[in-house]
Amino acid sequence: MSTALLTSLGRLLPLELHGAGGLVELEPRFGVAPLERTRWGEGDYVVGRVTPRSPLRIPFELPTGRLVEAGEGDRVLGALGTRAATLEVVGDWRAVGADGALQALTPAGLMGQVTSKSDQVPDLVELAYEGHLLEGERPLRMDDFVPARGRGSFSLPVVLIVGSSMSAGKTTTGRRLVRVLRSLGHRVLAAKLTGAARYRDVLSLGDAGAEWIFDFVDAGLPSTVCEPEVYRAKLRDLLARMGELPADVAVFEAGASPLEPYNGSVAFEELRPHLACTVLCASDPYAVVGIIDAFGHRPDLVAGPTANTEAGVQLVKRLAQVRALDARQREAEPELRRLLERALKSACASGAASPPA
Image (cartoon, rainbow, N blue to C red; front, side, top):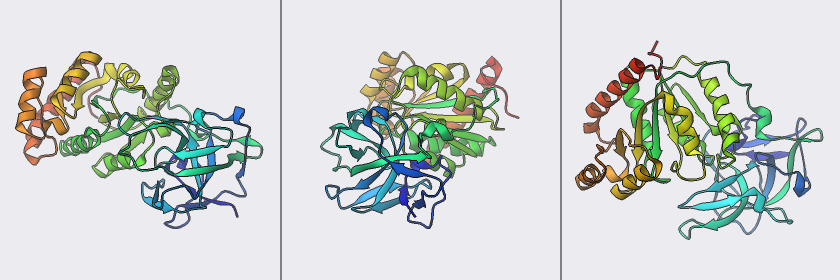
């Protein structure tokens, strides 16, 4: 049997993990064969073999969110895509040369070729392209396994979390918001709408109490670095699916910042009619000012590292006239409860969202 390690980008595929090691059998349903470079495309499922040039420790993320280590010679199933992380790695499947040498741009199996990398990031996994995943002679891509567009009309009040950059505390804050909303008796839907594939963050929102979780992978995207209209259509399809669920409120995270090429600004445009509350997670007070000035939107609350100290809280208030709060602290819960209750009540009263069932 032909086996490969299934990364979390392959979770759309109808394949069953065998044991804790993350291996799946590809045959008899699927085959693997190389395609001419001109036939490659975004979201294609591909198999690469770990080369001797790779680091000794090679973590990959399984569809369960668990990390496993691959070794030299192991076959890995992921998808072609693009990443544009300002603090870590920039890479693109279009940059792959004639030799087919791939790199794992994220542990989730996002594959391409690095074009720029911070020297703070360890060496990435090197993969030799073995071929595309095939059904018969047809190459398969993520789009082939996305459910049909939902018939629901999205009308949930949205708590939107944006950031000044990656690693600004968005997911940590999201977990806290989910917990507070659950404590208020709401059924919560949570999603990460932009970024580069990594399932761990989304799963953690479920662990915090969200009854339904999604991310852009569920729409067939390996990352949201794509043409704005492509992303817009995918987001609308995903929102329609979410609209079929009996949730009371949605907590959405836009990965990275809305000014980066992950289409965060498109997500904001699409969600604007449903916004109940916007939380900006920022690395420092000056980033708060920069995002407000550049993006033209003043958040309802600032969180993240800039709110870790009273000095940061006071500087955000002085520079940006916005309340900052360390959402991780137990002492913050009463204020978060008041903020969210007011926001949801206001959104329903204004018609921006339907009242909870």
